[in-house]
Length: 52
Image (cartoon, rainbow, N blue to C red; front, side, top):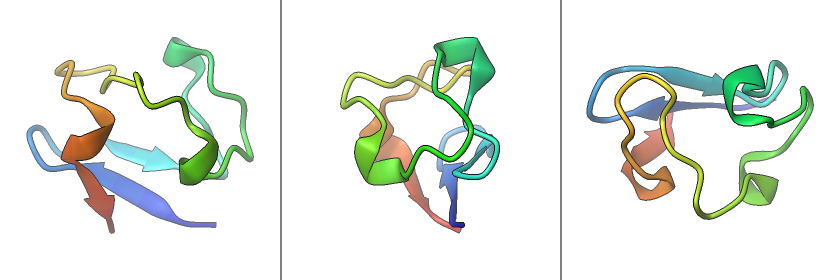
């Protein structure tokens, strides 16, 4: 599964792990993460993430 890194703070979203803080279940593909997703560390938007 892929990982996406926040270009602002370096937080890594792992598709395998999801993001419990934002209610995204483990195994959720990046394409299926809601468009209004924000980085749990710095608040950057989904558009500020890139494939790691």
